[in-house]
Image (cartoon, rainbow, N blue to C red; front, side, top):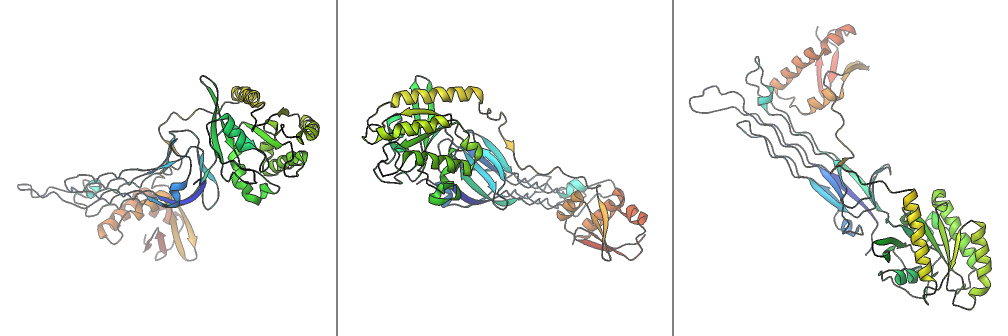
Length: 430
């Protein structure tokens, strides 16, 4: 089953908590603090696996949560870091923010590995807070929480050339003739319901990838007949091969079909409509084709496009068409090569924001409360147990050290005023 869209929830692991421990050994009556740091939480990675060609696996599993780091241990031993979680997707998968629709990363290259959500950092144990004046700290840090979000996965096939045209124009027949692909072929509209890829060989060491896009109809750009679901699969192609039923087997006008498809391409994406296009008049072995070919050739020439006459079913003109497509693709590759894959093992998409220092803050007044705001300071406070008196005393000393009390005095904050820093509130006294 071909599935090209999925929505999943991903979350990196929480960091392990630092612990409060003291060294207790024989003959060492005052061994001091010995609480270790917590381990880091597991990160979320996306990996482009060329062995996959569909998002089918995500129909059965929608939540991907990396494990948490282990808490610290005694004797200054850190907790274990959690293993990372890798999520395999087919090459060509775009990862979007489910809320905004923004493309966060494009998994184009086989083997590409992207760090998507870093795991939370482990908290510091009480041994990290020991100073000459605080020799036995009785508090530690909590681990930093991981980060979670819903993302949309959208697969766009990667091919050198894409077959487009109305239903029953003969695209699948052509693909089956020129490659080893085995699409379903029958004489009724919408035989092809999912895009298919075929590798076309031009000789030793020379190949290109051809995609069979299900037939488009009028209104496809607006989603009629699942048009937008199919149109996105030709966005990555270098060349469009526009197959037209020159015989008008179903009573259709080949020229009108040609114009309809190009209009849909224009309405969907002007850039896509301007992409190089070869117009292929198929079914030329049928009697009615002869009277339509001149008009179709004239329409293609008017648009400045190459015109080729073939019969995929009778294998007439197909070899010449394949050679010409191959030549055009080589020219397009030379003119606009696809960028090389990144050399780094991991491309960091959503790294932890640069850690703001705790001494960067500002003070604002909200009603009768003076609020001290600072990203680094608030992050530190979230990791401390504010029910622990020693932790609160540590913060009070920190506030004085980084200049919060001095800044409040400079603002003429009256004594007894309520000051809030993160979740901590206190009365200001000079």
